[in-house]
Image (tube, rainbow, N blue to C red):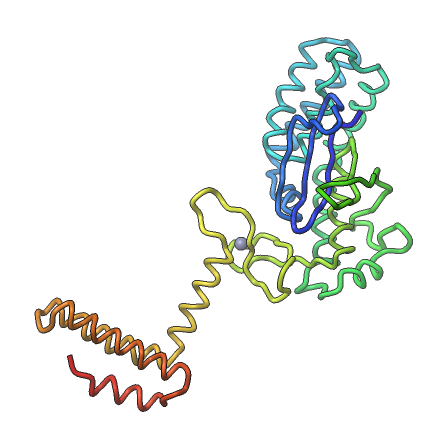
Length: 319
Ligand SMILES: [Zn+2]
């Protein structure tokens, strides 16, 4: 019987949820870029999530004590809402789902769920702070440097953090199996959310992945590619531009405005473009000129001709 699987493969992370333990036939499958689940978990709105977790925990406890079906339903309705908000929270839903299924759960499991829900609601805010601290002290390339292994070793004594506000690692239930044709990897089979956070953090250290705050959106992003990357490539809403593209465009614009060759070209270009409107030249004449001007600019960019030669050409070029 398992509720949720989590594993990393390449630059991706994978999640499978299954309340019925049908090996290989999950009820929900999700693929995300590496570390996306942990980063979105940190971005959840605490003011919204914590009260929901507390209500769920209270209802579940009521269900444990009285076996009141309506308390179970109330908890499940809110767990369903949370499941849609975040893949980690889906684990809570999946685990609680099976109580009234064919086999049903024993009292022990129902009580275990009650304890875990209560603990999770209580620790939700605290855990996220510990993770933030871990990012800053161990993974943040700007404050902790490029070597997460070194930083982790410095910040922990055996399995205990030197700073109690730092995330504490614990044993997690890892298996090992084929995850795609021809490749095996560790797979986390867990019944608590904390293990998923734990597994994400230790994987960053093991892989040497650093994080940084994006220069455009201000969110954390994993540096799975170049360490010098300043803009994130994190998923955006449909139709929106990714920060990396926005950053590339900004840099291009900046380069262009700083570039004397481009400046000289643009000045003449604008002047002639205005001539079309004034009726001094035709569209065809303008395009013929701009084509020639671009060729000359290319020569100048490649240092075949000097900037002065190019400026001279622009001044002398006739339409
Ligand atoms: Zn960004």
